[in-house]
Length: 278
Image (cartoon, rainbow, N blue to C red; front, side, top):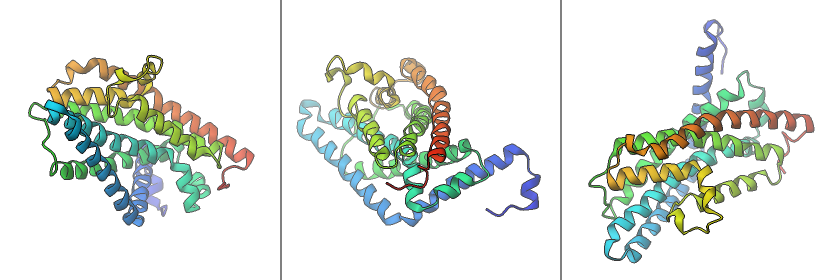
């Protein structure tokens, strides 16, 4: 970015906003650069959701429409939420692949600015993907959404997105600490979230010792709230039991993730791990 006289005269918060937009725009250009790969992954995600939907049709019994809708809500939301998590957690690996990690970390912008910019882009891109998926899926299935409260569902999704951005920041530390195996550790994070959050089933079916793990997953509360809103028309005010944990996680995870990422960056620079690709 060219630094002009007008840019230097801007206040600190204005410069930070410009930098946040710059990081979001950079991720857009990276997506555009690998557009065909993005299409491949979108097709894969849609096919996976359709597969889950047909399982609901085949095994839904007398209420196949409800079962199908239940499963598809889980599948689509998992696609959105996991994409946000993955995009943040893969920050370091992506920078290493592009060969830009040292330039990025030397840029005159705070680490919070970088991660917030990437988080904003992840949310916007995730929404676009979610809309495309919903359009395709609606061509194949009859969904039980007659009483849906879309406003409550969107509000809960927005709150959950903040906590997922913070959760992704926490996971992004792993590739900094271990260039060889760090990315695999973030995949374990994703797998655990998928297992304990009740994406395709009620958490009640999990072993008793495993069920408490759902309480630390923002995806669990988001799915509960959004399913209640879409399937039963529950209002936002009636969803406090799902909303307050998301608010707490949204207040804790982003600062915690930023702190851990900064500590990890300092450690990686001190020990020479920053440039290593494995």
